[in-house]
Structure formats: structure tokens, C-alpha cells
Image: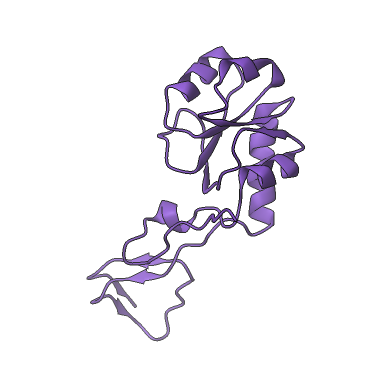
Length: 151
């Protein structure tokens, strides 16, 4: 079984970790977008463009040569690419989702994953000396620093 749960300890988890995808794998994403998985099925916690810094368990997409090269030089473990680009990537080291339109698949996955509740939520984080009036309405997932006063 592939585990796909990032750490979510509110004391140590960053906002990016808290918002990570839950129980999502490359095989699941390939099915969702109508693509084909080549390489190892891996957990996926983030979807990010290749220009963003790589993080563990992150899927990106590459639509042409310069982006394929950027993917190969990055820490990204997986990408959505066109069938014509398969030969440019060693699938023993990285995984690929093959799709006719990688950018459409990538952004459609964001929408689908949001609608299906697969993204995590921010955990409440309130500073120990935050002063919040009993009548204040404070929504879930709000971070309130120490010393903040809400009347």
C-alpha cells in the first residue's frame, strides 16, 4: 500500500504541508485526467509548475523541450508530458503521466482535487497570548500570532 499522508502536526507543519493532497497517488491522478502512468506509482502531495522549487512527492507538467529540461534538472519526481516526449525521460528514475495536453490535465487535476476534497486544510494556530474577544467570529484555519488583539 502506498501511503500519501504528509506530516500535519500543527506545531511543526508549514502551511504548505497542511494544504498538501491527501491519499493521492500518480495512478489515481492518471485515472482522473485520462492519462497513462509510466514508471513507479508514488504518493503525490503537491502539484506545482516546473518553475517552482521542487518538494518531495510533487507532480509538475512539461509541454515542450525547455520545460522537459527544467524538469530533468529539478528535484521533481514526476511530470505530466506528451507521448512524443517519453523518450527524453528515464522512467526508471522518474514517473510520467502521459496526456495529449499536459497543461490541460495539470490544471484540470487541481479543480478535480479541490472539488473532491483531496487538499488538506489549514489547522488553527493561535498564539499563546493572543487576545480574542468572546464576541469575535474567527473562522477555521486562521493563524493568529502572539500579541494580536481582536475586539
